[in-house]
Length: 413
Image 1 (spheres, helix red, strand yellow):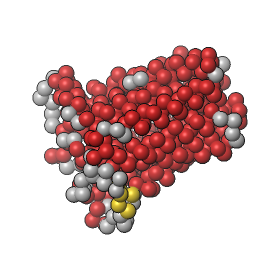
Image 2 (tube, helix red, strand yellow):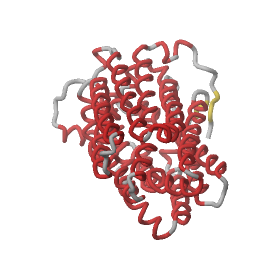
Image 3 (tube, helix red, strand yellow):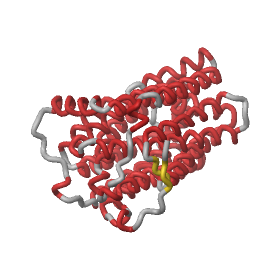
Image 4 (cartoon, helix red, strand yellow):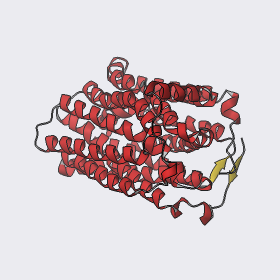
């Protein structure tokens, strides 16, 4: 595995020179801030309403399930229509839905089923925006600036999420979960204004639809299966999210809160996001020529978080495991996004990103729904050890195929 430590990119390759990129960066950063506050606030809201770990899992699973179901169609829309239109429309509607959730929590009229229903609505809106917001990146910067743009976007979002996770527990403790989610509603409104201000060249927007949605979905699927490294790592991500999704969404908050108190889970997520930030900083300079080999090797660090939670250790060890998890996942994610951007045609990008998201997350609702009952039966620590083992095995297996080990970064970008 060879890698190159590059100097800071010259101004001619800096994405900061592009106004559309700056608006995209601001909008996605704002969404990252609010979206980090909501999971903590929602989890504590369900628990405060008397909900169990299983009910919390169902609320989170409602979001994930609708997100998965909607994403494939959103990918087709992202290749058919102006991507900025989809992004700002979804942000405005998400502002409305989160305002409704905030009001019901603030007035003590919320119920667990209602929170699950609104979670499903937010999952659909997130799905509409996600493929378009990933596929639009090459439209905002020249090709030489693309690697830096990907790293900066992820770094800014993760920085915002560190702040959001750190603030979430404080906001809930001081003002209640309703006001915490109201902050999320405001960030969606501000991001919609940023996406409205984006001005892309008319020729770079997707062409109007000329075929059926089924035809476009089939073409996107063919493109995914044309690249062995692509569908293989999507399958690896499916296993990761099946196992780890329930730990972060259900078991982690309950287990860590019972051991160290309510604020500890927020700090664990903050440590996770700090790892993301560190990984993002590394990718600004560290650019391995065999990007998927390097990224997947770093991905093995994700097992550190569930392993640390499974052991009888002090909180700082668990925070260290969360940091290493985020570090490895971020270095992989930047190289993964760049691999797709460099090897997939622009008119299929949104669909490929949609298949990536669906393939990765399709089993997450099942993991969220089953983690509570399984952990209750076998014990929290036992299930956390099983999760760490499975995650490690899946990552090692993903390193074996030649297509993963040999895909190289294009030097013309």
